[in-house]
Length: 312
Ligand code: FDA
Image (cartoon, rainbow, N blue to C red; front, side):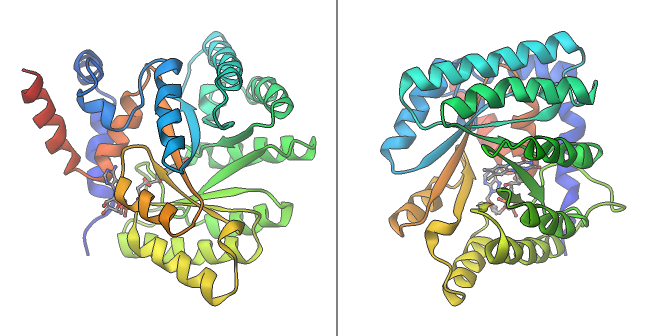
């Protein structure tokens, strides 16, 4: 059995290198062919909207993510919050589908919980007015509980245009799925993108996959419009089979994939009549997100090198 966490650990370490970040930022988005463009829609909201429009023409749903995480000061959290509020206005004006994803450390979860809750409310209020759904991404395990607690606080305050993410590699996630199902909350299920120790997370792919299937069944049985977010054909097949065998209609859940990953599978699911949402990230702070994508599939390094040589 291969060690699932090995590549993630290497790319996680590299993602903290300031030199590599400087170099990547210089070359990664320079032209439409530059390597980071494969996974990131652009650095500006206008570029993201252009990509979103194209995605819409393919019969795909979408969620826009303004990249950023781990801000260090309340001012930075305030700036990110303002950017999201501005993003809502731009999306409304553009007429594309209203659905966004965000990270709580971008809004100050790592600084002070109350500031983060206030910032999130500043986004959810106008989002609600415009009929937006807001997905709170899940970050590394020091933030799991605080993310769920903040989500639950807002749920108790009657916000219903918001959902959260569970990572099946964490041992705790089956219990969390039951906790969220009991609320009637919308959950996105993923395998998990961070390097986590074995004290909290499965390390082997086979264990992670088995947990994914267990939680997928919990969500399909008693969840509320869950999102099954994976590029793994075995997980997708397991989901379709379980739904078919238990009479769960395809409009009671959706699949989700990342921009630039397995476009063939995305199109195939649309053809089969499944809901298929693409997660479209954009913004200047793309480096950590990009490194997580390389960590999931080290073969992606090949296309980075190829694109650098192609640009000369
Ligand atoms: P797995 O990693 O086992 O890959 C299965 C197959 O998919 C591979 O063999 C390959 O063919 C293809 N593939 C996977 N990743 C690829 C890549 N980067 N490039 C090319 N091919 C690739 N994580 C998290 O911790 N918090 C979050 O909030 C989110 N949010 C999120 C939203 C959405 C819509 C998706 C699809 C994923 C996330 N993730 C996430 C990331 C998730 O945790 C996970 O790291 C990736 O989805 C990769 O896992 P797979 O389920 O695809 O399986």
